[in-house]
Length: 463
Ligand SMILES: [Zn+2]
Image 1 (spheres, rainbow, N blue to C red):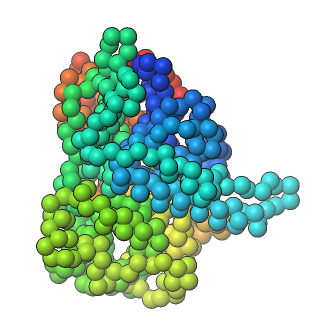
Image 2 (image 1 turned 180 degrees about the vertical axis):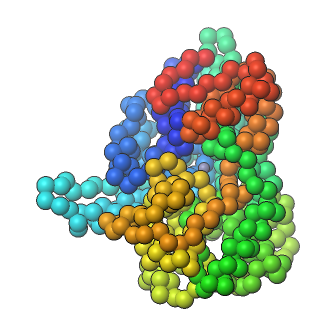
Image 3 (image 1 turned 120 degrees about the vertical axis):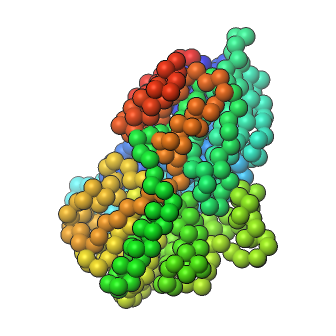
């Protein structure tokens, strides 16, 4: 069996892991690279393999960095099936269509501002390309196994990361040998609201594990809730705005859920909260269609009290661009949650253009900011930022809370990985090198016999 990571090897985006076994090529995820705007196009424009030779895709979840290049794969000749949970299929569809829409908008903007001699920008894919991806989906339930080829069986388990997210377990038979290979996709934190905790994986010889927070331990929930309360109170005192960049899925719902709870329990005064993302509103609909993914507490909230955990009195979903623009002139205090999560695109950019220079405002970072993104630069204290060809000073306060993360931290990764029975080898992906090395060394302290592989992009491993 051969394994090649063509993305998410030494970085956290662009997850694409190719498994070659008994003459078949199975692609685990087909994600887009995210990062600096100009480099993005270049990175995502070409696929590192011949798409027509891939036999099947197994999709762990619907985040863009795991599903965003599927339309490219189909455009370049992929005709196989895409296995995913029903919730992941629905989430991925919205995410890919949103990406096509953003690309079309960006291309239009760039083409209006072309300098002499510059080539016009063409989107990598359009909505019609997403149309061609959708019929290829085959849905799977959690704990369901299916033989997809003679020598390959796949099983899905709950990853507890975002709605529909899965851990994948493959049984590969080659030349009389049986190999059990597992893949975490992205692993969630246990004890988070809404989603059920990650499942325990059955026995596996090899585990491909994410390692985003392989070198971090999240602060505890009580500390972060207190931090959130203080940040909101400060904003109220200064009549400032709190900008929260968040992916439309995952943190967005977790934060809304927490703000809802804190307001109801009287810890937070009622201040207006805007979810400025039509995508988040659509995804919230997907949430209500897939109650099979909820934990008991959320099911109870939905069914017994007939209450919607994602909607409450001071929460407003912003749909139109006009409505979004009106928020620019509206006085604070208010909380604005907007995409994109790493501040690379989307409506958060427009809010920052208007508010980043005001010292009464706060940029609240709750998610992972990949190297090279605007979010990372702001988090690391950049004094000026470039937003749509304008250089602006950063005067707003920058705060970070990482307890609402949709990713497991070092302790949780360790206990998950070490809990996989019969594990012999671990391939660490989806983490920067520092995180991967730190996690590897902790794993080896506890299990010196465990083989740990830290692959480079495009490097093949044989098992
Ligand atoms: Zn993810």
